[in-house]
Structure formats: C-alpha cells, structure tokens
Length: 157
Image 1 (cartoon, helix red, strand yellow):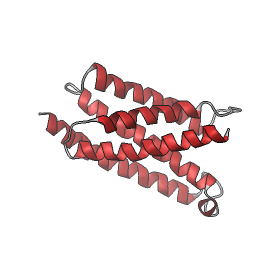
Image 2: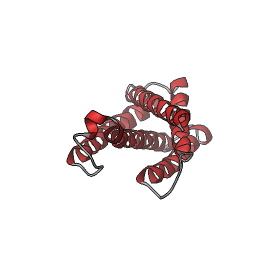
Image 3: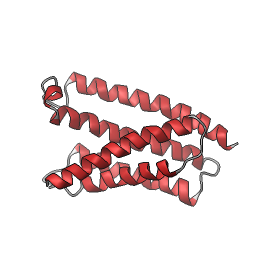
Image 4: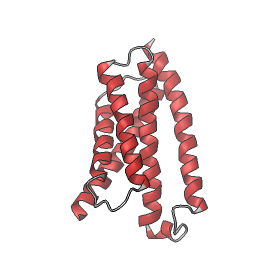
C-alpha cells in the first residue's frame, strides 16, 4: 500500500506542476507540446490510481476522481479528435483547467489531513481554513482559465 501511495502522490504532484506550466503556456499563447502530454497522462493516472486504494464507502475523493476522468476524456477528445478546431480549443482550455482545479482541490484536502502542522489548524475537512484555501484555488483557476482561454484562442487565429 505504501508503494501505491507513493506512486499516486508523485503522479499527482507531477500533474499539478505540469498543469500549471501548461496553463501558463496557454496564457502565453504558445502551442502545446510534450509538457501537455505529461500533464494529461499524470492527471489521468492520478485519478485511476486513486481507485486502487481500499474502498469501503463513497468519498468525495472518489467522486472527484470519477468526474475528473470524464472531464479528461472530453479534453482528450477536443485535443486529439477535434484537434482544437473552433470551439474545441476553448473546450480544451476549460476542461484542462477544471482537471487542474480538481487536482489542487484534492491536494489541499490531503495536505490538511496528512501534514501534521496543517492538520493541527484544521482537524476536519470542514474547517474554515480548508474552505478558504479551496475558494482561493477556485478563484485562481477561474482567473487563469479566463486568461488562458482568451490568449490561447487568440494565438490560434
């Protein structure tokens, strides 16, 4: 179980780091390259490996993982089947940023659960500081998503 946890966490952190870099590429109006493939692959694998842990009940993490896989399927369709043509470019940006938000959302919750210094300030997932961090992540992803959609679309024209 420790190996699975390590793999899951490493995939998640690579997905989050590469996700922000991809978003900044889109904001900069740059074309997507290999880093985008890293983001998509690690984000998909993060969600998939989350289902390998023992499941005794339906948790928010499982729900987010399932939704993320649907969102990522749409991203893959927009990118590879539709090749970002027309409105599919915006669809890709929205779904990629949404998948990134889900990764960050889970990171926040897991950090407050597993890191003793953070857990001391928020012994439950409903603690105000956890909600504030989640709201800050949401606002950040919305703002980045708006800039990415505007600039990435403009770069294609």
